[in-house]
Amino acid sequence: MEGFIPEKSGISCYQGNRLIVLGIESSCDETAAAICSQGRILASIVSSQEIHTLYGGVVPELAAREHERYLNSIVDRVMERSGLILTDLEGLAVTQGPGLAGTLLTGVCFAKGLALSLSLPILGVNHLEAHIFANFLAEPDLTYPFVCLLVSGGHTQLWYIKGLQDYQLLGTSRDDAAGEAFDKGARILGLKYPGGPEIERLAAGGDNHAVDFPRAFINSPELEFSFSGLKTALLYFMDDVKSGRKTAHIVDVAASYQAAIIDVLTVKLAQAVSRTGVSTCVIAGGVAANTYLRQSVTNIFENEVKVLFPEQALCTDNAAMVAYLGEIYLSKGISTALDFPVKPNFSLVKK
Image (cartoon, rainbow, N blue to C red; front, top):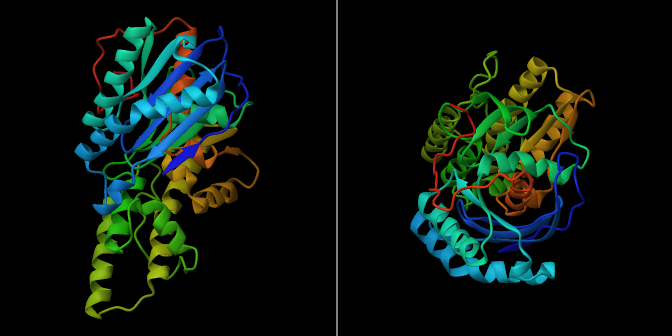
């Protein structure tokens, strides 16, 4: 399935010379390319790999093959949509990590080859940092500092963003990420992959108070998350339903499970905002597309704190955020040596 991210106007954190940057994203199961110039997305294409629905989750080797199969044609199409040709490019940005090693390698090798052939500077981009900066694309007036809830299939983190390259990790998950909990929960409920949208659709008609699922750390002052216990609770509950020891409507189970995840995310975000004293918070990552999360966060702050959500196309993995962040760094003369490695566990935390 292919999606298109529309053009966006420039933003406050971009200050530099005009550059035309091609961004490439291949960290997991979305093959994506985008063109950014002066903080504006000129064209963007995201191709989602539907083959993984057959297996209930991402198969790394298949994902890498799909990237190799489609990346060249996607870059060709994004260049055509932008009205540019390859020789117009002034830099490349590609996701260096975190992600699956094989899929990252496919995108990085392609980008390196293109950069070498065109004699262009290249930047290896941190996927998490790009997700955070996608909010600047969504909101031209976003300014520092702010708190970011970064919530996806691989990460659940709270960040205090004070400026470019000035990030403080406030809290993270001890085990499963929220998106991972959605995917595993969907599998237990017999739903398709990816699980988040499936649970959200099913939960829309359910009672989110029907099942009292655990909410780890919700009453703790610590800015931590844990979702493995919730997943286990769902597994045991459904075993009881199947054996006849308990009765429940699946729509109510889905709604209650979703609420347990979202309640913790919302409360911890509120704690982070209170602790830092910021007046703005943003949500980033694939789970940011969840409507129930958006409503819950909006309700808990009651207009006292500005809450920003990127549009749906900027929540899931995309190359627009990679190209945009790449232009910021490349415009400052910051690039990466051509022999840089992929980093499946690339961290934003400075060591």
